[in-house]
Amino acid sequence: MQRVRDLEFFKQIREIREYEFGMFHFFDGLVTSEMNEGEIFNWTIAEKIIDVAYEVFGRDEPIAYISNRIHNYSVVPTDWLKFHKHRHQLEFYSIVAYDNSGLAIVVLERMFFRNKIRQFSNLENAIKWSLAKINEKN
Image 1 (cartoon, one colour):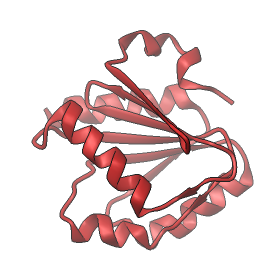
Image 2 (image 1 turned 180 degrees about the horizontal axis):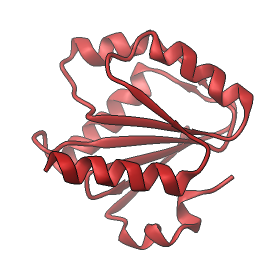
Image 3 (image 1 turned 45 degrees about the vertical axis):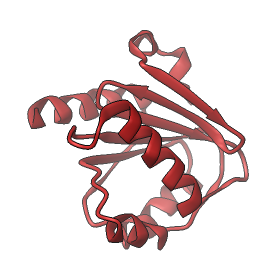
């Protein structure tokens, strides 16, 4: 299991936001999350992070999001419908899962997220892929 703060890439960080529900790291065009054990990632949490992402990046930059699932937590997959209803854009979304429970959530999320969800078992690979996609987009 890899944490963002333990990677060499961490030196490129622009901003960190820590909340009672988890930690969010903002890099150029990239957001990573590490939710706390037992939390429920829902629309209320998502709105907070979306607002911060717009504050850090602006509304016109492509954004990649990596969910680094170092803890077990729940996701409300139907809240992706609210994300799309509010016309938010997420260019690239990937999940780093280290066990079967993390992978099971991916199956549910794929039913509600309109774009492709990329799965990884290694955080560094997820970061490399995300940055390459952002660079292609720019």
